[in-house]
Structures are given as C-alpha cells and as structure tokens.
Image (tube, rainbow, N blue to C red):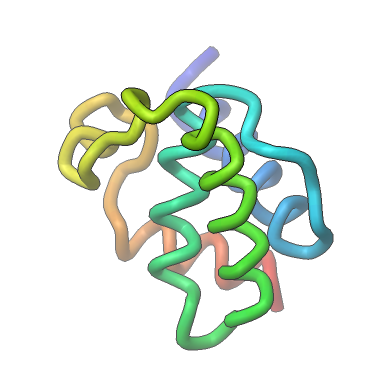
Length: 94
C-alpha cells in the first residue's frame, strides 16, 4: 500500500471510531494514531476526542509497551504531521 492509501485508511478508521463508540484499536499503529488524533481534535470535537482516546486506552491496557511518543509515530510514517492529522480528520468530522 502506498503512504497516501495508508493515511486515507487510518483517517477513515479514525473518523468511524470518533463518530460512534467502537471497539479498541486493532493494532499498535491504530492505537497510537487514535491517541494523537484525540489530542489534536479535542478543542473542536470533544466527544469524538473522548471516543478516540477510549479506543486507544483499551488497546494500551492490553499492550502497555506499544505506546509511543508522537515523534516516533511520525518517524514510523503512520502520520505525516500533527497539523495535517488535525486538519484532515477535522475535515472528515464536519
């Protein structure tokens, strides 16, 4: 999968989890991206932010060593940048 395809799939998953309570993240990548997404949309989308954080926390409760700092999430190529994540996810949540 190309980087843009991966990004689009993650954004689609973030938006779905943000809109309705969903099960925990499916893997380390989702859990870390959900956590960061929760943080960057909190001011405009507090309920959606809470849902993303919950899905992330549920995963990390079972896999505590999988949590990464934001820089590592970017270095892994899971997101391009926090501002881009915020803007693209906010656009999907409007």
